Image (cartoon, rainbow, N blue to C red; front, side):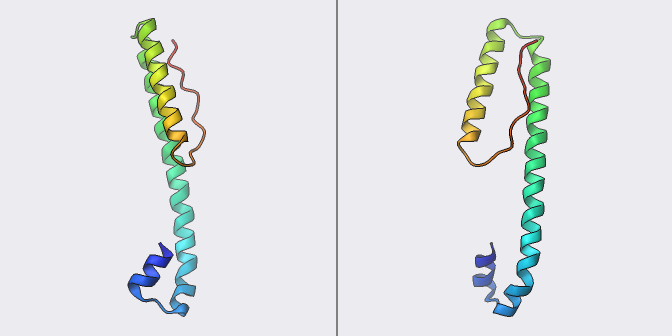
Length: 91
């Protein structure tokens, strides 16, 4: 982002020096927001799966578990993520 702003706005070295700490702070804050949001999303999904488990048959629970595992593997292959809380769909 810094390079793009520097290029698009034609920033002077002095401006870059003043803006850089602002961008660093924003990046750190945004990283934390993404971590917190991702963690909460996984919690909600896990809670929902646990609630659903009481309604599903054994076979449906196994399939739900497989879907969850596939989703987890997919996410782990697409960048750094926080570890998921346990969200086993068993009753």
